[in-house]
Amino acid sequence: MNKLYVSINKLPPLFIVLFCVVSLFIFAFLIVCSAEASGADKNVSGLEFMSQSPFCTISRDYSERLISEEKQMACNRYFDEKFFAPWSQDKPVGGVDLLLWGFRAFSRRKVFGENRQPRSREWFGVQHDNASIESFGTLNRKAISVEEADLRVFPTQDPLFYSFDEPGEGYPFDYLQNSTVQPGEPLFVSHISKDGMWAFVNASTASGWMDIRRLAWISEAQIEEWKKHSLCVVVKDNVPLLDSEGVFYALSKVGTILPISRDRTLADCYEVLIAIRGSGGNALFRSVSLDKKAAVAKPFPMTKWNAAFIASQFIGESYGWGGLNLKRDCSATTRDFFTVFGIWLPRNSKAQGQIGQKIDVQNLSVCLKEKRIKEEGIPFRTLATMPGHVMLYIGEYYGMPVFLHNVWRFRFLEEGKEYSHIVGRAVITPLNPRIKSEKGELIETRIGERVSHFVILGDK
Image (cartoon, rainbow, N blue to C red; front, top):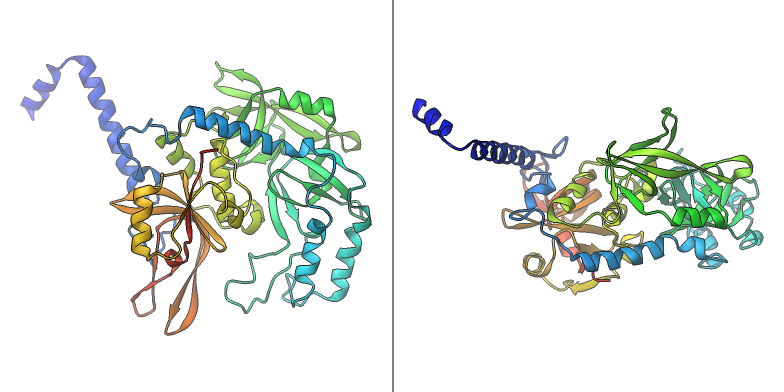
């Protein structure tokens, strides 16, 4: 021990400092890689032993780019074009069919309310009347979201469920929950509901009925003012937007985009613009501060470390179908992940599987799919898609390809009968996680079998 003490003290001071820094980094990295998601699931093979830290899938040069700067900036320009598209509209997209599809889809089958009682014909009639279909496309006004908000299929907060007795149905699958918008999103309003409480809006990724109190009318001059600034994007969840006096305006999540009015370098924060609802529902701009630990200039450089950091923000988040309860489902998770890096994704899993560079694997075994993703997939840029679900490939864990996804349940067959194991949160799993039966046997979930394509993003 004394010899070691003497030998270290004979080393140059700079070497000692570097040695300490590297040692602390390695120690911290090992802690991160040993971390499990809160409430690790001992019944799912993969969650029982697998680290729930995306940092454990990266190695070597952590600053290495996963996409060139040139490509990323091209993607970001396309992203901004799509994001601001509602402010370039002069009529609603999709036509009246976009307004009516829910009535056609749900009025034909038995559906239920929150009290588990069937929805009546009268209830559907009330919703149809309030939708004021004859007014579709008569207002055609531009707006901006002033806080986080739901987009609903009907102009109501009433939920609509399929039979609670069917596997995988009931809560949280409220089929009137279409999507959500974040504070500061461009909107185009087709018309207002008969009761005046709801606006039918086109947002950049989805359409639906929005509580009118959560939007404000915006003028062309205000749009130009908003768009002339550089943009920042929030990189941590549930960041409150507060003014200098501590007044709360809205809650921001990973992927919220706001214009930078001032870069306060010495204070290590951005002053950003938010919109509030003023007199007559017209937009007023306010300035709030965002710590640079919570927001970065958009797009965030897509390096290995940055990708792992953003992915880590989703781990353990509760499942929220269509953004229910301001949570995420599988496709909202992937969309918000790529938003930070300026890479555009549509809202639902089916649409996400139809863009990018597609690798068809639907006729391959699970083993061959794993081999293919390891050979051709790019970590943090590749989706695994299947009917009704999407996952983000984040690299290898001890040679095994692993995926980040927010999943409600794993389905499996036991003695010819289908069962469900509820996960209900964002997790990292192998391609084909297995479930422990009551007898202690491991049963395949068959997720891997259902994967039909891998999709590589970021080449647009």
